[in-house]
Image: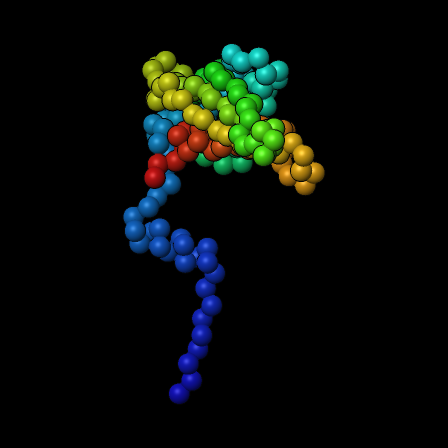
Length: 167
């Protein structure tokens, strides 16, 4: 008698596990929400061009996710309205001489998702925070721009989760 070994990919095992446990990825938005408009976020901080970077990141994540179609406001079922309410770049750790070695960047946004037809919020006034860190004198470490990008990535993922996923 011979025994056959069947190899299964980790992705397939994960999919089977999710189905068996009752997980799904249906949208949290109303069933009639198929498209979304993302106007530029309002930048209430003194950090220049942050609204451009955040808005573009959110749009790119929505396009990559492909659950909702990104559209002009006149064609959209929902509108994601956001404001950048805080930007911090502060020392986080110090060396023995009490000089800053590591800095922490924190970005805080407030977002609301509206049903464009009814002008009613689907969810509102969610405050989301992202952070990243960088070192001053370490050439191979994260830079200030890397820390800002990490902060925005965290916020963008949270917005995407609120908008299209139902865990």
